[in-house]
Length: 174
Image (cartoon, rainbow, N blue to C red):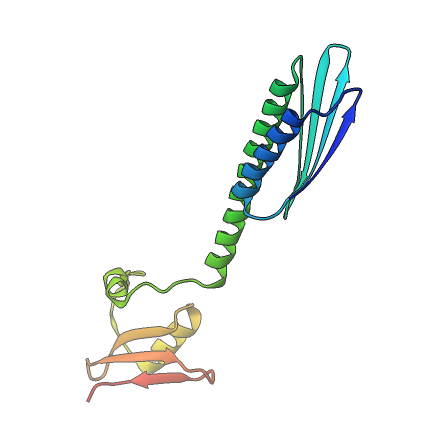
C-alpha cells in the first residue's frame, strides 16, 4: 500500500496519519490487492477539506468531503470511498460471473433432461388417402421436412421426407 499525503495550509498530525493508515488498510483488505492512494488535506477559512484519490486494479476512486472538523471530513470521505469500492468489487464479480456462464454452459444431468423432454404438437391436418406423387407435391409446397400419409392404392401408412441431397425419401412398412 502506497499512501502519499499533501497538506495545504495545515500540518499533518500523527493522529490523522495513523487514522488514514488504519482506514486504508481496511480498504486494502476489502479489495484484496495493494492500493495507491493520495490524500489531500486543506484548510480554507473555517472549512476542512479532504480529498482522497485511490487507484485500484480496475478503476480510480475519488472522494471529497468538506466539514468544519478534520476527523469528520476524513470519516465521511473514507466512508464514501469504501462504499464505492464495494460497488466496484460487486461489478467486477458480476462481470466475471457473466463471462463464465457464457463461456461454459453447463449441461443438466441426464435425469433432468428426461424430465424436460416433452412432445409439442405442431399442427393438425386431415389424413386423406393420396398417391406418392400428390404427397411429393404437398411436401414441396409446404415448409415441412416430413409428411406422413396413407397411400390411396394400398391404404397403408407411408412417410415421405426430404433427403440431404435434395431428393425425396419414402419409407413404407412391410
